[in-house]
Length: 590
Image (tube, rainbow, N blue to C red; front, side):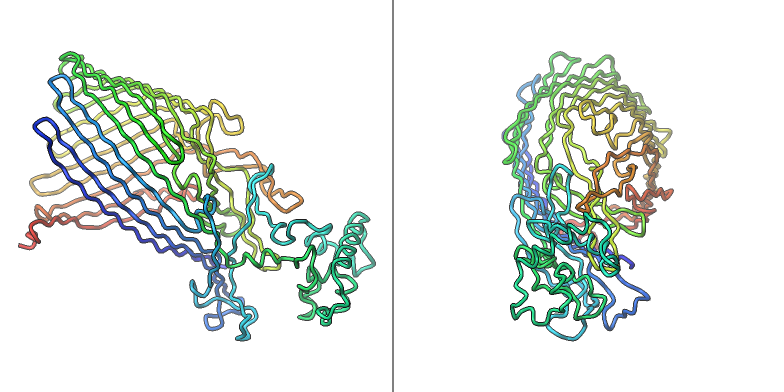
């Protein structure tokens, strides 16, 4: 079938800022921000040449997902000139982030909700189209029961179909030996023993003299294993699964049916506050020291203090030496902690999908950072060269878990391509060491250019089950920019981009026998080998001032149409637009 992905996104952002002064030596800025996002995703499967049409229904609802997200922040910053030697910057802030929806299946607070497939599409196929109350539209929406165990992150398919205990003989095993049952008996003694054990349990747990079994075929009464699974349904409607035949009180697939067209919804929030103070201290006419103290507090991770000391020393009139040493701190967000969602499903025969799982056990990362740089400039040229070294504890990264998840439905003609499972984790110790250089040059009053280069040695220094090199960190990075400006005629143009060399791509993974399954039908976890990539993304933008308050622009993102399905880059994209400024109730129109 053709897969149709639909997304309805509504985003609103509001900001308010106020600036003022307190006396002669202090200024302040108060910022308020609020943003909200509502995202509704749905996926349809459309079938062609299958006897379906738009009048009787031709679609299946493959998936539903939604997210509500809001963020509010208040920040207050002060600057005070204490005297000729000290200039203080200080302030504090508060932020609250809240999210709810089916994307937060991993959240601490969760609940379920039934959906009506007809709310998402009016042309769904109905197998038993008799205009009866029991007619059900075709839908794959399901509240999958996931569990974590020694085998990784797996869909508890057996738990949904069988309940708390897996029977002696599974659905797959019965269908495997079905021809033998009607051809003289099961050949394998071990399989025969399983069949006999399950038959004995079903006969002990079900009273076939009860009136509820009056319409049960005699074959199913004598061979209840076949009736429990509906193994002979190809013989006609009378031989469909008999849901009166139960194992441990439930019929086969009862738990699965209860979760059909059901969403698992979650809610979570993060509240953060911070305060900081910074002093620009003119120690000598040529040297400035900048000590910074910052304290962060999170409702989830507690309080943490970071310190930084920076220095700027004038070597000559246009030569500066800069140095910094300090600590850093970063917390995971709601997405890394609690989101569980299928970013997109598999397509075709070999394009695997992406399924993301949050990790509520993530810890904040802490770092020690050191850098040293030299800057210089003249009338037309600016240059900078520097070295840096960062050591990070509990480094946060996303990664391929080495496992697939398969949302296959028994008895369906369409089989979903599996999804790769991605998640987030901490690496005990990471080290990043590098060199960076940058040159900017103005050729004349119209043309200027920028060239940058970074060499990075980024290694995982602790976790042997992940690559030695950190993922998505290119060894070499080149930044290029060329700018044109004609102020007299209002023209501006920019060509810029970056080239990344020798990067281990977290999205491009190769494994041996990735499709191997265990006895329960779950894919066995494998160690992935990440592919190294080199690529560039280049962009172009042209602007024209029609008048002082009116500008038109046109641009091309990904100018050379670099394509990479693994990293899901956009194809070449054209942008057009206008910028207008209004003041004094529409003076632009005067």
